[in-house]
Length: 179
Image 1 (cartoon, helix red, strand yellow):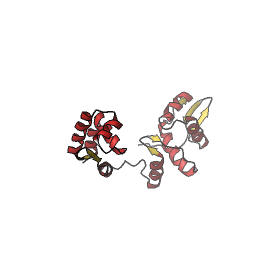
Image 2 (cartoon, rainbow, N blue to C red):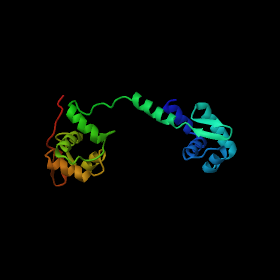
Image 3 (tube, rainbow, N blue to C red):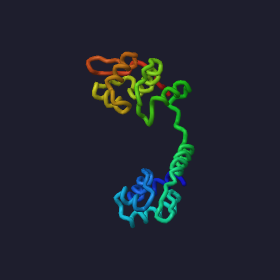
Image 4 (cartoon, rainbow, N blue to C red):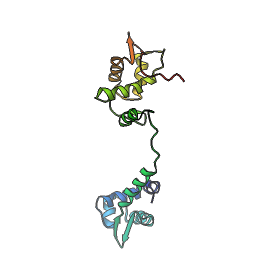
């Protein structure tokens, strides 16, 4: 069974509650009804649908969850997922960026200066060379990456990637793609 099928089955609130009750240790229709707050009829209907799909086995009034199905579906989905696109052509830089950047967000600011420089050089690219940014605009651009915009601004200025004067920032360093 695939992850999408399981998600579809659990999209129904009654079936989700039945699975939750079984996962928490309920073993009979009566125990599931008590734990889930559903009627016996609702539990029976949900359990029948879950049993047809192979997530639950029924033996009279006894119910059991095939929890191994969840792990197998998750593993299969992870194996089928495409590999993320590299964030840098340089394998060493990509390794650093992959450790600290997920889905366009900075997970944390690296403590090690070398790694921090790789991340900062990646982040500074949101600033166009030759354009001056009021602090508020700089904050908006950096907030997309990480909530601690003050720390990011400070690191970018300290490392010479941004310059600052009277609350206005501009790009003064880092790699620039000229193609």
